Length: 388
Image (cartoon, rainbow, N blue to C red):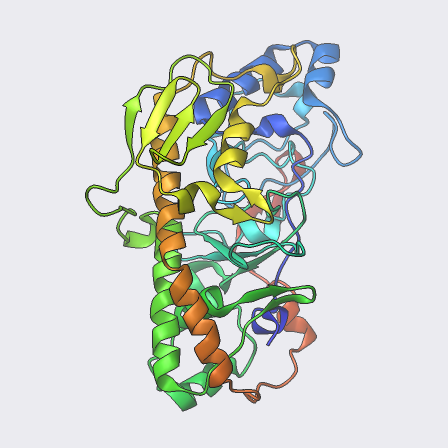
């Protein structure tokens, strides 16, 4: 079953339009905003980097759930909107200024349902021969592009705020409950898709088993994969490797490292003059879309930037918090890699016990569109009231 029929409502990736609206730390975003609003008219236009979708005079509504201005950005002189977390690439949690005036295509329908109940599945754009998971999971809004730059599809688990109305094919949950019991919940279907899904040229394919035992094993594995990727969100435990295998900083990452290398013999990650060990080879080699995740994560933080731009405003030295995030990233990738054999075994068992006809009717067109949220109050351009 194609994931497109299993979770029918999806959107394309966000199109930020300008790189300076995201950063690995919130302080940098506040500094960039201050530089923008302090600038005169001509300098502000150059710093902002206008596009066909957004200029300093664009009139747009506020993003759902965000307290941001809706006046013309050319007149803006207030404080920076509070940055929020976003997944910007595979396993890369960064920050974004959640101001609709700054983002070319922000997908307001996703912001409207992004809350403490929501989970997002990010279906990777197909890269022939690439290894890695077909689906990534996050509790915060994903930007939606793979490290290879290919657009994916963002699929929320729920169509409405508060965990209401699962984004599942009509009739699917009932069919699964009839076979596996009334205890099957939307999160279980989500977990099964994460564990059993595989990438193909047509999109992510999710086979279903007719065996209750295989179903239970797959759901358990899927919940483990989801929990690791959520990193302690939704009340779960933060990911940790067993004692003796946890990565530690053996030599501090000083100043501004210009490269990252892996010492396979000592299982050490060399970040400039810094050294982190032990780092399992599986974590270093972990790829998404044909791109090594750790290298891509590092490159996003140290790439050369054009002087005089807002992107050039960033920390003067490597922040300690980035090191902590790197240690957690290594842990997440190592734990996911440890489950690869179980995912392979599940794929074999699902194929052996495949349920070829789950009995779900064709997906109606309305299920592929976002639900109407009629009680959600939002502010339109120039402070006008909007009811969506």
